[in-house]
Image: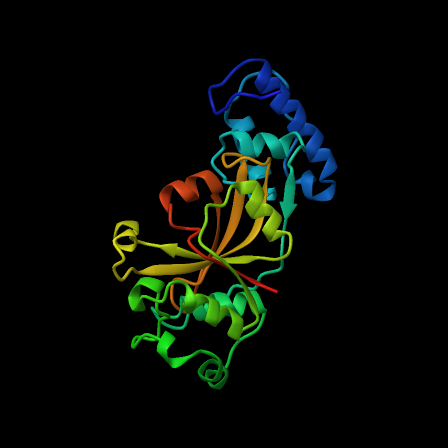
Length: 251
C-alpha cells in the first residue's frame, strides 16, 4: 500500500500509521532510541512534535532531514527498504582544485597514494597541465583515458549509461563507486572540452525507486576539507543529469 506525502499540518489515518510506526521503530532502536523522547500520541495530527520525531528518525537512517515523509522515509519507517548498503569509506579531500580524481581513487582503494606512485601509474598524456585528469572530449580519446587510468590502479570501469536506483544498488553491493559528474552536458554532446567533478557514492538505501532512494556522498571538495552529505537519488540525477557519466569501482 502506498502512503501519501506527509508534513506538518497533515491530518488523518496516514498520520496515525506514521506515528504508530515511529513509536515501534523507537523501541527497535533500543538505547539509541531512548533519547528520542516519550512515545508520540497517535492522534492523527502532524504537529511540531511529530515533525521533530521524523527529523530524528531521518537522522538515524541518514535520510534527508527535512521533516517531510516521502517515499524514502516511509520505506524506513515501515521497515520495507529493498536495500541498505553501507561501506566504510574514509573521506579523502582533494589536495588542489584539479585533483578530485586522485582523491576519489584514494577513497576507493582505501589508502593514500604517493607522488611517485601516481607518476609511475598514470600515463603522462592523460594528465592536464593543471594537475587534473583529461576528459574524453579534451583529447578525443573515445573512452580510452578512463579505461587506461582504471586499469593502472586495478579499478573496474563502467561505460557511460543511465543508472536506475535499483541497478546502482546492485553494483554498490560490491563496494562504493566513484562517479564522474559532467558539469556542462551541452558542451559534452557538442564534443567540446568539458569540466567534470568526481564524487564517491559510499552508501545507498531505499525502496527500489528513484524517489525512494537516498545516497551518502563523499565529496573531495572543498580543497583540504571535503564533505559528506546525503542526497535523494531522484533529485541528484535531476540536478546533475551527467552524474553517472562514468563509474569506477575497486575490483
